[in-house]
Image (cartoon, rainbow, N blue to C red):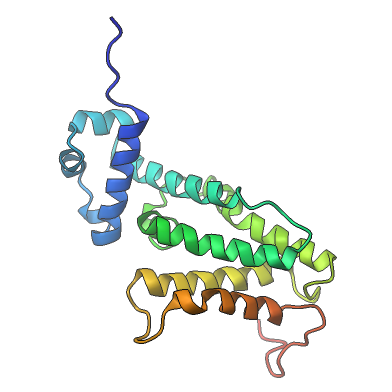
Length: 209
């Protein structure tokens, strides 16, 4: 009879999501493989078998956060309205964060979890950032966005605004009486409109570097 496999993918994902919750709530220093095993009702041996070490667990945690985010972006297919695609990517960014707040924090906030080597990390960053840059580039070619700025600069402004608003929600720092959910898409659209072709830089800011 074949031996029952207990250290399977379902257990690996359960451990990863429990570990993500611990890191989100109390930081990486609070992450104990023994306690994680107890919380997941498995053995420490299983944790070591799946991840090798705490460093291996943290690396896998980061990789899982990347995988799910790239997977979400992959559901968005380019259209003949690149500016609209930028909006849709921004909305997907927020949806990922709300659905996976623990993994979002690991991917974009907690650099201590980002254990992959420096040579690996840039490729993963490109995978999460490239769809937005590509949409802006297509928008410039279509005459929707100003060509006076690099597409990476326009994409970064969108990314930064999205990250800022999402972080207010996840950190519990929304201003009293204001809900990011009520203005998020409008803010995205206003920013995209500001980068439209033909718009001139605001006086006094054109040469800021």
